Length: 203
Ligand code: GAR
Image (cartoon, rainbow, N blue to C red; front, side):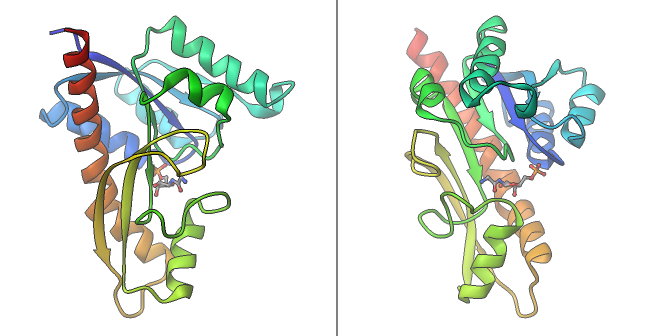
C-alpha cells in the first residue's frame, strides 16, 4: 500500500505532532506517514521532535517573506517538492488565506482546542481559547478536528470530543486536560480516517 504523505505545520511545543508520531509508531495511523514538518518559528520545540524521530523539517519565517502571499508560496513550494497529499495544522499559529486553502480543498486539517462553533475564529488560539471558555463559564469544552477552508475554523468538522471543566480550573490546567483527553486522541484518529479516504479515492 502506498501511504498518504503527510506534512505537519507547527509553531510551538508540538505535542500534537508528538501524538501523531506516536500514533504512527503504535499502529493507530497506518494509512499515512509523516514526511515533512514545517515550522514558522525557528525555536519551535516541534522541530526537535521531528529531528529526534528522523523526520525531515523546514522553517519558513514570515518576517523573512515579502508578503503573506510570498509566505504561503514558500510553504506551497515545500508541499509540492515533497509530494505531500495531506497537510495537518497542529498548533500552527498563522492563518492561511484562500490563496493557500483553495489549492488543497479537503486536504488540510486543523485541530482546534474547543467545541466549534464555540470559542473559535480570529483571535482564538492557544491559551486564549481556554481563557474565553473559563470566563464565559461553560461547563463542557473540548476539541475539534476540521477541514481548513478560507474561513478561520470554519471548515467541515471531522471529529469532536467533549471535556468537562472542573472546579478551580485555570487556562493552563484546562489546556492540558483538553490536550490529553481530546486533541491527542482525535487528531491521530482523524489523520488515519482522512489518509485512508485519500488512498481509497486513488483506486
Ligand atoms: C493546541 O492546543 C492546539 O489545539 C492549539 O494550540 C496548541 C498547540 O499545542 N491550536 C490552536 O489554538 C489553533 N487555533 P502543540 O504545539 O503542543 O501541539
